[in-house]
Length: 256
Image (cartoon, rainbow, N blue to C red; front, side):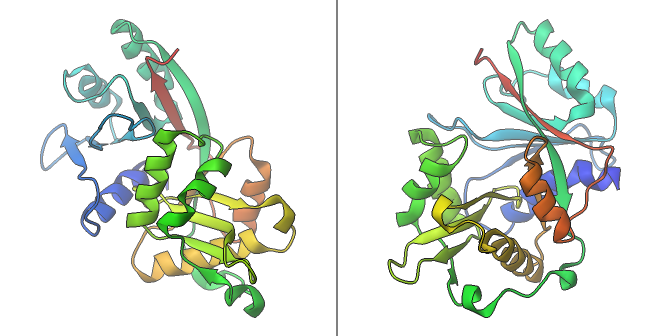
């Protein structure tokens, strides 16, 4: 399962690249067809602070060679890879005299069998819809890394191009809870407004979104930060599993 965990985010990028006319992704391999490294690199424009380069590798030496190449890694952006390569990433960054900071370490939670998900209560199910662009500011204000113009543009792009689910308030018809999909197919930004918590809305949204993604052939998975024990319990209780040997890590360069 370790190889699956290492590769699922790269697979998700390529899966959506072939389905959605959004930002084109550049895909690099160290050789073809017997590759050891696949690297997915989104296009960067001014303000694209949160886009990350994602790497799957079966061989540390090949990964190090890729990091050493010019014009492949953007050393001003985020890099996502396995935590087991932290020492190597830090060493190569040091050789290049690039400041680096490990900003997040996450469990990768994967749902293999959605048939075991609990049914969504009919009262909640009737209020489930999809987000639209008018909801971008609401999501941006509540996201942990949001409330900036850069994050606003990213979230608007996610709502515009990728699947989302939300629970609408019966009176105002405004979202009171939601979940989005990243360009890598990972579910994320799960959030319930404070005054509506304790009603099972997050559980309903994860269940509904998981079924929807699975029915369309998507890999069903998400990242949960190590310190977020509440979300970790939610996903494990819904049948999501992880490989205990794997952690995903995000590294930020040149921002210290």
